[in-house]
Length: 110
Image (cartoon, helix red, strand yellow):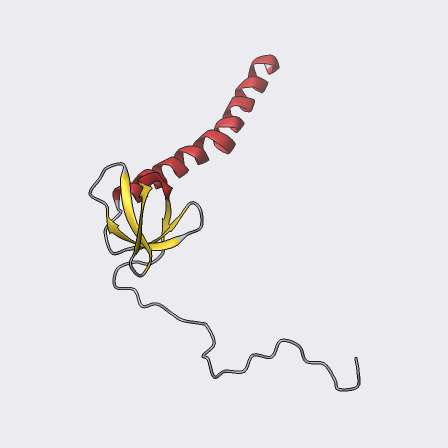
């Protein structure tokens, strides 16, 4: 009985730790690909950020990566969407006139 139980437990563990998470990632990627809409900000798998301009082709998408610079990429290259429509973007970057102190050392030569 133990000889039969061990491989069964091993297969169950393999399924829970490897197969199921891979299925979830694949399902999330399919959902992302089906929800691509022009005007959304995205991040590509290469780390490039841009705005979708055309998603009418089932295999390709056009992404504006700088004003007037549009590249054509495979739809599968879209890794994630950055913002949701209607969300306010929160800017935590310091203003240009803010002073940023990087190092507070004493004037005693420390």
